[in-house]
Amino acid sequence: MNTFEAKKIVTNCYLEILNRNPDDFGLNHYVNLLVGKKIDSLQLKLLLTNSKEYLIKFPQTMPSLIYLNNENKIPNLNIVVMYRIKNVERWIGNSLESTSKICNKIVILDDGSTDNTVKICKTFSSVVDIHEQKNLVFDETRDKNLLLQMALKYDPDYILVLDGDEIIMPGMEKILYEDLIYLHPNSDIFEFKILDMSEQPNRYRINNPTTNYIHKFLFKVNNQKNLHFLPTRFPYNMHCARIPDNLNKTNNVSQSRVKILHYGYYDQKLKQKKYDLYNKLDPNATEFYKYEHIINPKKFSIPDDFAYLSEGYYIKDI
Image 1 (tube, rainbow, N blue to C red):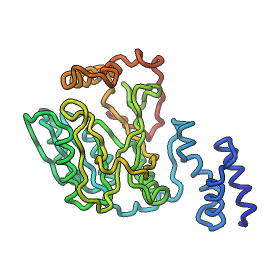
Image 2 (cartoon, helix red, strand yellow; image 1 turned 180 degrees about the horizontal axis):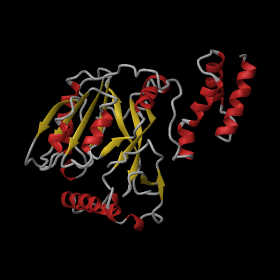
Image 3 (cartoon, one colour; image 1 turned 180 degrees about the vertical axis):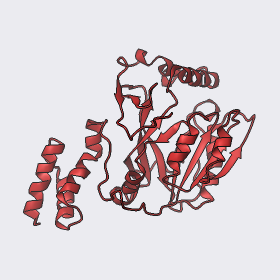
Image 4 (cartoon, rainbow, N blue to C red; image 1 turned 90 degrees about the vertical axis):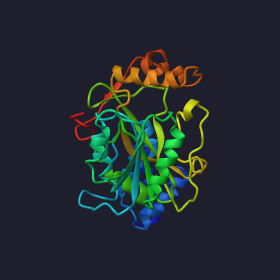
């Protein structure tokens, strides 16, 4: 394939998929890949339909494999997952099952669970360390710094930070590895999109402007020293970031195609529980709409609107 042919293919694909002409950077980038036989025209189309621009325009699109296929083995990367949890027996089994497919080491800090959360965690061989604490003052920064040290003991390439009510969408394992190895090998921090699951196993809310549903979840360690989380401006160090603060200022951030199923607001009972906790810890809240958006989202947005995941992309028995 010569340069003229490649430019024509790239331009046509941009017009078909993104409904615009390619910018100079995109044109030169994909022409070089085509001419150099690093991709073919089908992979070019897949790259564009998996691009951040396309996924923003069509948020219900499910990502697809570009370089790997179902027969390819996942490359060996040392990903350590860290959880800070309490009383999440309803979700934690499915969550650990999903993360165990992308890593072989999980570290957990349990902040005084009184249900079967810890018992369930101990059934997973991938869970290599559990720190149990009871009757301590709520402090997310303290807990995450402890978790970070637990994770770093296993010399990880990457650290993934999850809550106990978050589950990696089924089928994302190879998508993640493509993002890390092929699409964004030079990125240090990866953002995932959160789907706020609601009252049915395959239903999620799509129109809540009160919350940013793209968050930083995973970071590359890169032998960096003295990684740490800083105190927050909120009482009891609430709302501590997922990524160490001395990594947050990097510009090398990419949005992964991985999606997270979030069950923290799955039904009204759970919403009320979260609302009560936040108001107990932060009774004079001046941010986050005084947390009223949790129990009364219609006050801050248009009426509820939902989308539904196709079979294979959600947890049936939740």
